[in-house]
Image 1 (cartoon, rainbow, N blue to C red):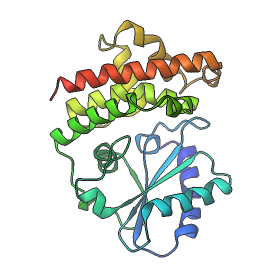
Image 2 (image 1 turned 180 degrees about the vertical axis):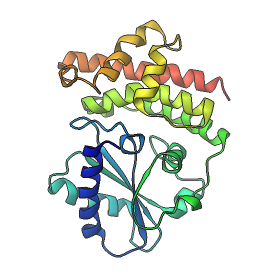
Image 3 (image 1 turned 60 degrees about the horizontal axis):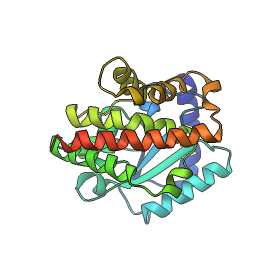
Length: 241
């Protein structure tokens, strides 16, 4: 992790411990924190609470923790809560994929608090990952227009990288960071020419604040490109079945 990401994660961890209290839960730094490419001012601080006790419904717990953190000025912190049982047994579905989340937890997450429960979490099978990647790509492409219209710039940049990440996961069983996926795609003939400018923009957002300032019309074009890329990836993932 970059020092700024680690410092922010430690601050948030201390506050989350105050909010939740007690025991029976663990906390992990996910995403860019775990991959070591956290970008201050751009990356969200993604934290996963894994509950192995009686803390009530995890959706309500996540809402309570996020509301308290955002009220304290941690606006770029996103806390998700899972029961350990749900990570151990197939059945739970997430918009962006629970099997992918389990791979991230096992391979790149940073343990921040509580017992380290990762030895209790089974690794998804290759078939499970391929099917989830196909479902995630198709599901996001099919989201209604009002959902797409509310995606902020950082979400659009992440969505543009996601199809490449899903294809990589389906082929290898590993979940890579956005930078790796975008750079690999742009240095190969994997993507079609129409995708190249928007993938370049998504990559440049990680390095230059100036390119993040899209006018409204350009943001609409980014949404169209994101959907197109997801449909393209879904078709390729269908071929792997």
